Image (cartoon, rainbow, N blue to C red; front, side, top):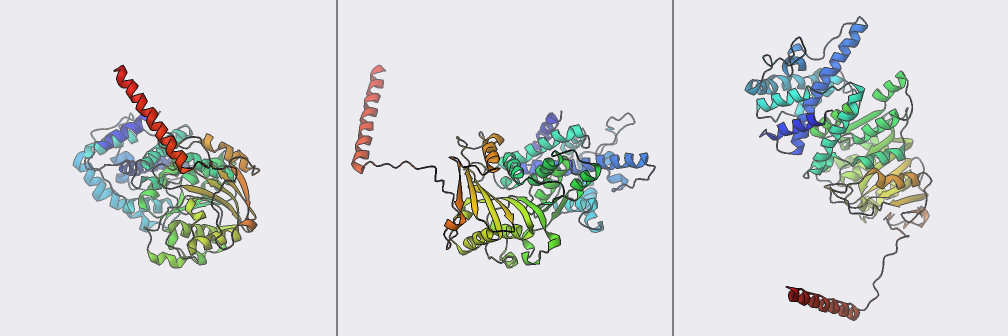
Length: 485
């Protein structure tokens, strides 16, 4: 129903000189979607209050409400074009009045868990990139067609928005940092299997794909009572994100999946000293794909971690181990070089992981599983609280080269998910005893014992002779073609 609306929104954005990339399209769509959602949420709250004979207090002052400036209506419900500001007047209202007003909510909010704080946080750094108020008017009218709170619309809206995130991830540059393949997320969530009553955390939340899938997984596990649904909504899913754009996208993605007031905080997880983490701060489950590389963090953050390293993912991994409760479970994506690097931090971190946690499974992903990312990755699955004795490895063999035209899909991972239940042994899976691991290097390299590489036993002279024979055959074939011509 809304597929064409989303296409029309993108088509309008492409005409604006201020929006040049898929990141821009997603960013600008996100803040507008958020304000439309806020309007629908407020109207629903008002209707609920009226049914209970209560007074509803709007979050926004009247002139800043969607149905006043963005989409004023006539009495019959149609758009009132005479009342709708457009062109330079619209741009001036957005930049001079609306955005500063919304930014102020951050200072007014009582705490970071309130909707007021999230409004202020979203608009504190993000800005409108529209250079044409007429194009912005077109986009506002298209977004006004969307209805967020109807259950039958949520699945389609969330799917369309995730597709925008996917396009952003495929667009290259730094778009990939916001996107983890959804089939991989679903499979990781199935393995970790979060349940109602457990808390789920992602300290590098990005577009919140893991939290959205955890929500969907728990919600569909069984029929929930009203109290249980409230618990799922408000006391289950938590995340932190450093970057403003990712924070906005994560908030919007969770909202479109039906999570009305996401527990996302905009902060740099790595600025927190892991030694200060207390029991009250810990979570039952960690689901995450932290960023790789250390170029985005200053050296000052290293003091927050016992194992000093400039590799961002290694700092995150220390944080995740520390923030898990005893018995807590984790599924984390990391570069495959973590398993074999010979530098001291890598060795020390592998040793800590095996000593403090039961690393029960390692999923080895093929190159191309992450579109636009030139690195090979693995997924570590572990439970905190007892040391590792055996590791079940699974090497994904999709039987094809993966890329934009052949992306990772759920069927590719179906065998892994099924076999992981009993840690079945096969051509693609095997067990490694920790007792057999080198205690100096703690090397965990993926080395499938079931796949024997074919060895070429020919002598150099035999290889040269075969090359010469092929050259003769090629020359004869070329002569035959010339004779036919």
